Amino acid sequence: MGKTAILLVLALVRLRAAAAADNIPDPGSRETRNKAVAKRVFEEIFNQGKFQVADEIYSPDFRNHGLHRTADLREDQAAVHDEKRAFPDLHMSVDTMIAEGDLVTVVWTFRGTHDGPGYGVPPTGARIELRGITVWRIVDGKIRDEWTAFNELQIVRQIVARVKWFVLGSLVAAICLVWAIGRGVRRSRRR
Image 1 (cartoon, rainbow, N blue to C red):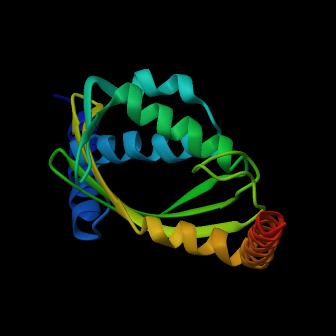
Image 2: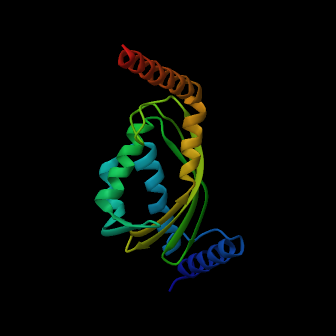
Image 3: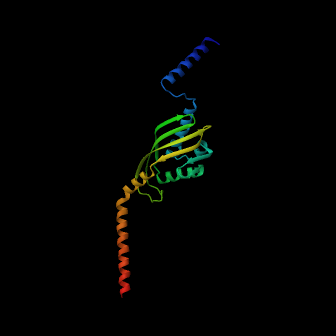
């Protein structure tokens, strides 16, 4: 081995040691690769709407482990399509991402305007913002398992806050209409 090669090896060893001392992730580590996969979900699927990359990112035997039921890849991606339809300007930002072994944990913030049909409610124009957490298990460069938690009631609260006066007015009108119809029926029975 020549003197130049030895100097290059020593320089590489020093760079790796310095990176480890400064907590700079090794770009070739499994954790760094898994974080890159996780970032693609937010950037490409949610933010850019490139749904076709799901086949590159998710394992065919993917499972989203919900609290009461587990969804497969088809169901999971159908839900993502519904969210993007309900919130066309949807933007998901990564607040914190930690990787250890085959697990990646992401604290994220969801922001979007409810301008499309979704969640069983017509478009309301409500601006939604919420935070959640997702843990993925990534095996061989593909997401195999997911556990996600967020406060679903927070979405409902923000939509209701936007439409509460409309809903309240509609409710009062419906009560008045029922009252008027009932009164009319009672009068017609007396005759």
